Image (cartoon, rainbow, N blue to C red):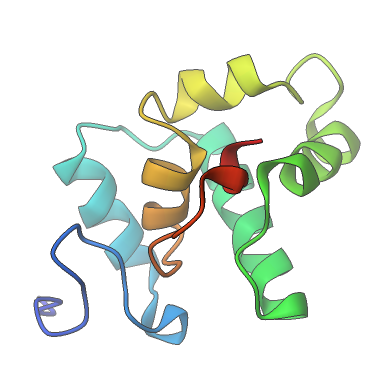
Length: 109
């Protein structure tokens, strides 16, 4: 079992998104009482993909556009994202996807 304590900040976010693994996602989600479903993984992978293309944490509005293409417009809503990550895209979705801690609230806009 990998020890992430020296790789994360006090809130559980990775300092370096390149250290992310699926195991990190599973353990982080469990610590947040989130059971990862297929829909969670789709969103997590979208976050990871967009980060790798831009080297920036993607804003929710960009993720919603990707969700519309991959999951359909009925799921491409803030309400659906908050059903997956009840404390927010930035606070939980980005943490599980291995992003650095968001410093701006614009991620959830």
